[in-house]
Amino acid sequence: MKDPDVIVSVKQAANPLPDFRKVAGWQDLRAIKAGKVFLVGEFLQHPSPLFVEGVEELARKLHPERFR
Image (cartoon, rainbow, N blue to C red; front, side, top):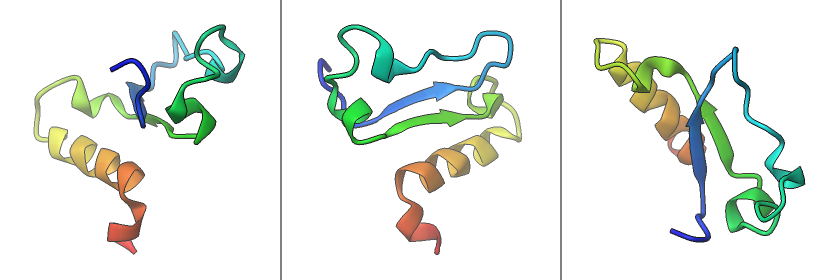
């Protein structure tokens, strides 16, 4: 997708993401303009019992209204 509604990435302390609003070409993306860049824990990278927690974390970020 060339202009995503949402960008999701995994938090990495050793290699944090740049501020995409300042990266050439990224500042015009719909997700960046709307502030819909979400960082989630590394639980989604490794299949384990904690994977479900990672999915819930992502769901809370994408649809916070469902968890009120």
